[in-house]
Amino acid sequence: MKFRIEKAVLIKLLIIGVLLFTVPFAVPFAFEFVLMADLMGLEALVLFLVYQSRQVISALGARVMEWRDHIAATIVLLASLYMFQPRVVLTHAAGSSLVMLLACSALMALALWVPAIYLSVGGFT
Image (cartoon, rainbow, N blue to C red; front, side, top):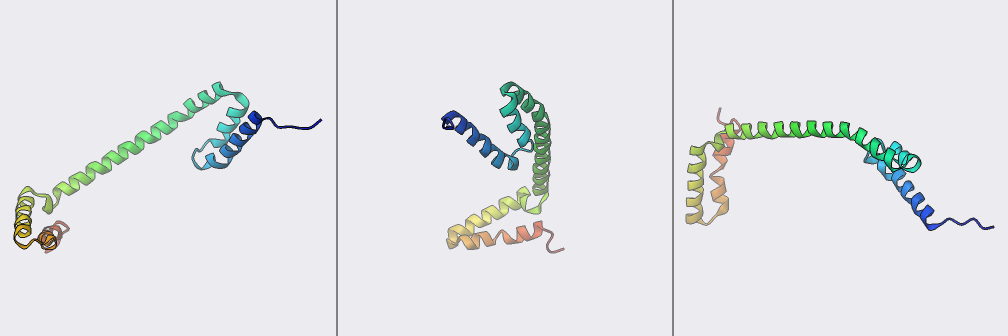
């Protein structure tokens, strides 16, 4: 009698092999995931994923809050710079537009912003 591997068993073995090879780099509980999928069935796997997702969701929430705080701090920092004060922005924008119209040089128009940028980082003090 010849030993023959059916197509369904071969596909299952291939999927399990690929999961065992690649998933440890993406999911911290990869081996448990594969074992539960193979041995205990879909119901146990879904319960395991629900249980493990609590930690992932809380970590993701903490990352989102940290990201939001960093964005808010960056906006406050930029708003306090000398360069972004309304009087400075309006005068330099008007001056840049005038230089652009008269000289047709974008480099000269952008050079008008150099003193404002330099003063924003604490220059001339």
